[in-house]
Length: 391
Image (cartoon, rainbow, N blue to C red; front, side):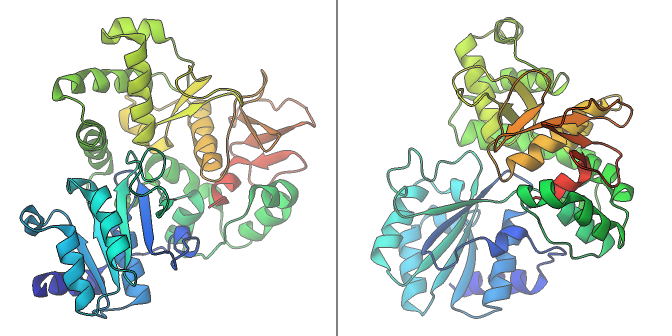
């Protein structure tokens, strides 16, 4: 136990979190079992340590542990939690949960055995915490930690403290909101960099971002999909090939028959692979309101714009980048659907159309036009960058 406490204190004292994540104020911290899900690279470990530092400092009542520790090859989580609890511990932060074989069952045992113990654990985005998890579905509160929004990136880079806005706020008051922001900073100075390398917090590290992102993507495939989903290694090459094809064609509609020929597998397997890639936060799938998996989606997008730049030999098409950006920002808070021809997305009965900076905007009072390169909008013409303030 002493070695865990020393490690905890060192990590909490040295954690660097230059921007406070919006999720920190959205979690109901009074809940006894909390799961923080997120894709690889979005900062789940830092988030846990930041919470420990804010709430407990170096108090022995809180302890961060990581299932990378070989201690857990010979000791159970239930044993460890019991010892921590008897020594006065009340909040246990658990990282790399998927590396512990019986994580779901033993989290439930801890919940039942130690009524005054709170457990907050991080999990891969592909892990099932509620749907399909009989151990936890009635006791866990699950939250999703995303990569940086444009607002979070801008606050970090420009030293600002802009708040987030709801979609309705932006639609009704975008001219005032944009004007207030523009009095302090020029968002379009920062926007291209965010699209290229601002989504994953590790852009702050002194390493080549593109190489780091490619490494992260491969870890998503090899660990978050193969290991957690228990898929045989021999199928990795097929999943990688499928992802490569989609990354060089998205946003796109799916030709499942053609993909099954190219990947040399069945149509049903192609759809399963695509769902795995969505769960790992590598793809976003756009469906009409009456559609969902295993039906074919209307369109497929990469999860965020940084992925587009990571795999493109040439500069990605501007409209593809902007559509990918808007879907990712809207999807953070709202259900996004495919709608009628001529609109890109539908959210809360609002239809959205995305325009690149060199496109002529079609006049339609019933469509929200999200326009690239626009500093401040008017009526239903809204700057695209402003949708990055949704979280």
